Length: 360
Image 1 (tube, rainbow, N blue to C red):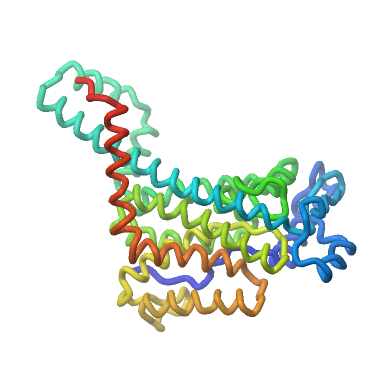
Image 2: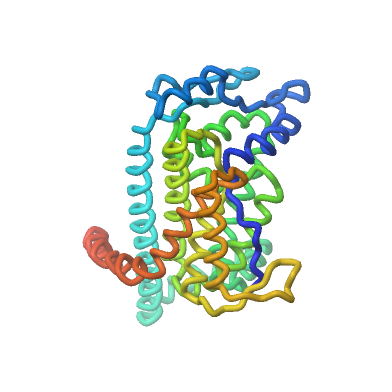
């Protein structure tokens, strides 16, 4: 098992105010070096109202214009939690339905290839052979490289690529307002639902994305070997959105609106699953390989730290999102994989009837 990194972090409100904003002011020019992007904090009126109101109605969300860009801050409408809950349930269900169709289509395609080979469809073979001969050399090299990857690396590579692309988009000044609106989860914003998903592929700092991708790469091998790529992807996507929902609930209850982003909620789901599935596996900390500990102990300590962060109000990371993702990983390990995943067979049967018999 690769080394365990302790640097799993989904950036939460405090980090965005303390470190994200200075970097934003310095690095994200909106239309040139003379114009800088600043994310607004709460207005003084919003702070005063917090002391007298437990929750604020929708109209008390304060859009503040900062150098031409509007950033929503202020109170959180608790009724938006229902929107977040419905989106979480719909997205998670849709994720597992999607990966079930993917699994079915993969098996169907392999079956048809085997059938065609038995029927000796020579024209088909010749055509495919001719097309392969016409492929460019770079395409052949790319295919060879892909085939050498392990199953875990094949599912990790596109996820990592998406995170790197979004990280690159943060570096484009003209896209900064769009990135803040759609790629940072904020329960006080008008756009609530899709940022819950898109923020799980979003990293602003280089250290943040490197740490998260290292942990994902370390644990994706064991997870894919146990779950398969389709189930792994369903768990990963669902854990990310559930982590965002947990963050929304915590911010609403504590009346602490703020931006959160990062893949660690989804990664915590995978990490919790692997550590619970293989609790006796020995892990070690990066840069300190001489100290080893069991995976079961590691996930308990990590979740304990995040629980303490929630109860004590720490705002270093989005501890609520970490806990949400980890709890889903534990749920999937002890119940979901054995009782929920097999239910896909009923849907796959309907999908098979809809597709009809395969064409020869």
